[in-house]
Length: 108
Image (tube, rainbow, N blue to C red; front, side):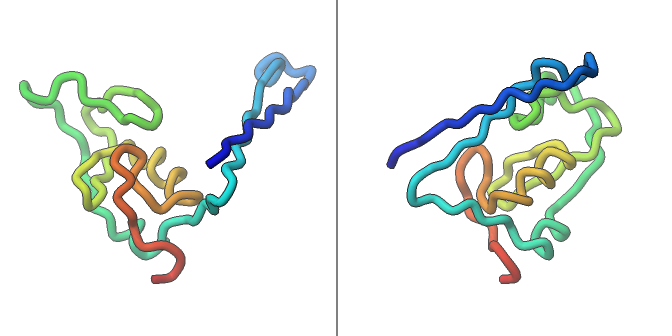
């Protein structure tokens, strides 16, 4: 398998966007397929609450710690992610970002 990385530098005169780098990856023989919208809607969700045994838990997509009141999604494999992060992930992928557990894709 070959991985090609292409990057484009987006220059915008506005300070908040100046120097932003966009990296697009193309992998030979790999087609990114989104997860089924029905499956994504049905994933287990909870409002995170800190306990003494849950210190330092974080979303491995955005790397931010889970704080009280944050909405967390649990995939069938048991891995937990920030709701927004995993929804964005599932728009282009149908597997767990950590263990590659496959969710149904398309309208399955």
